[in-house]
Amino acid sequence: MNKGGPGEVLTNIATGGLEELVKSRLPAKKKGNPVGETITLYDASLLIALILVGLILGYHAQKQQEKQISEIMQSWIGAHESQLYLQWGPPTEVYSDGAGGKIVVYTIRRQFVAPGSARTTVTDYGFGMVESRTTYTPPRIHEWSVYRAFWINPQGYIYHWAWRGL
Image 1 (cartoon, rainbow, N blue to C red):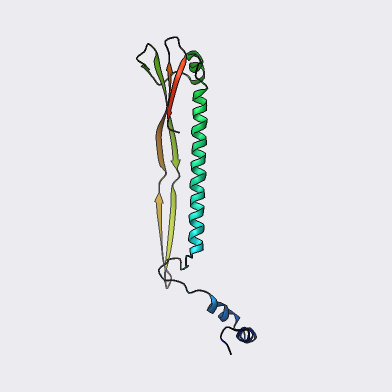
Image 2 (cartoon, rainbow, N blue to C red):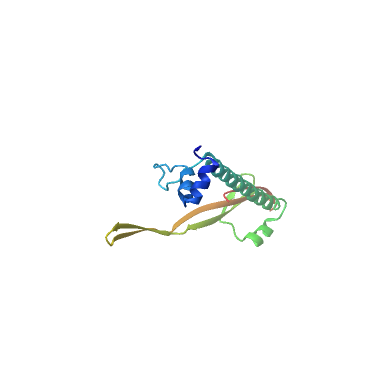
């Protein structure tokens, strides 16, 4: 009989060897991968595609945020400094612009806390001997400053702006 033909399938099913037949058709597992699974070209391509989509969406979101900040800053052109102070409060720093006006700077502190984690691994040595190890990673605090600056002419009107940091 031809190996793998319909006759073998029927014979194996009839003799209860369906499980062995299915196992014989599965690809062999590679020993190098700790999970024991073979990574196919399709899987790798799918992973790369998902990473690229994530990067593109992240880039797009950042560009949208930058555009929004620039629009807000631009909306202050021609406004009087008193309106700025009413809305934003007192500036963090004030400098001369060298032409009789001033540059007011708002420094904003941002913070992000990456949560901590605990990972436990259990090793069973047999004969009732079990070892458990827990590795704890504490939360991490990331801090940075963002800056918003407005140039104000001698008459008190905003004529230029700049920003840095999201």
